Structure formats: structure tokens, C-alpha cells
Image 1 (cartoon, rainbow, N blue to C red):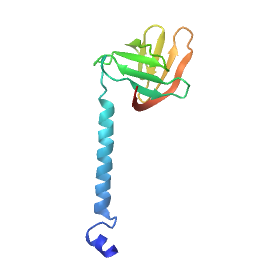
Image 2: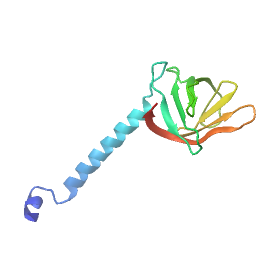
Image 3: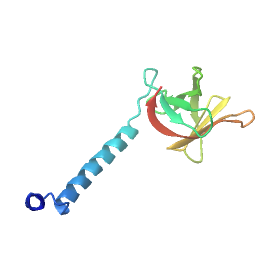
Image 4: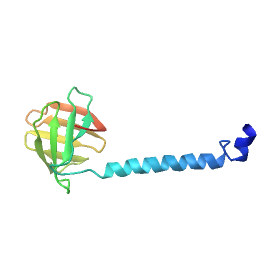
Length: 129
């Protein structure tokens, strides 16, 4: 049997290794392409992010330009409509009451009046709510 695998190039040699690496590269590329294409607008699904705190968040871009987001905190159905504001690192959105600081693959949400953390250590998991 071993001789048959070697004859067909299935011995785990360079040809098989290249094929596996090619498949892995394709899977990674498709995964990253999916991250770059976020749906936006009122019909777009909310994307749920799990947080280290007890409150998880769900959010979506409210417009194609990514100048505003819709945000849900915890189990609440209340939607906060936040506008983009200047930030030194990542993207910051606010409605004057709640701040959402998105640093790409992690985020935090806090109340602006007293800086109370509402959700922290949040990270992406592509589970729609």
C-alpha cells in the first residue's frame, strides 16, 4: 500500500504539501474577504460581539460610508444610533450618551457622563442576532 501512495504522489511529499498550503491560503483569503464586506443600513443584520463583561453587544454600520452605527447593548432591544467622531486610534462613535470605541477586532462601550464601562473586551464572532 505504501508503494501505491508513493507512486501516486500521496506520500505527504512536496506536491501534497503545496496542495494543502494552497487550500489553506484560499480559506484564509475568503475569510478575510468576508470581513471586509460588512452590510450596512436598516436591513443589515446586527453582528454580535462577545465581551469579557457580562454584557455582549450587537452592532451594524447604519450607512455605507461607515459614518454611523446602530448599537444594541446586552439583551436590550433598544438601538443606539451613534455617529462617528474623531479618534486617535480605531473608530469612535457616540450619540452623546454612549460611546463605542472600535479598534478593529476589539471594542468597548461606555457611558459618556461618568465613563462607566457597559461592555469591555468585546471581540468579533460572526453570529447574527
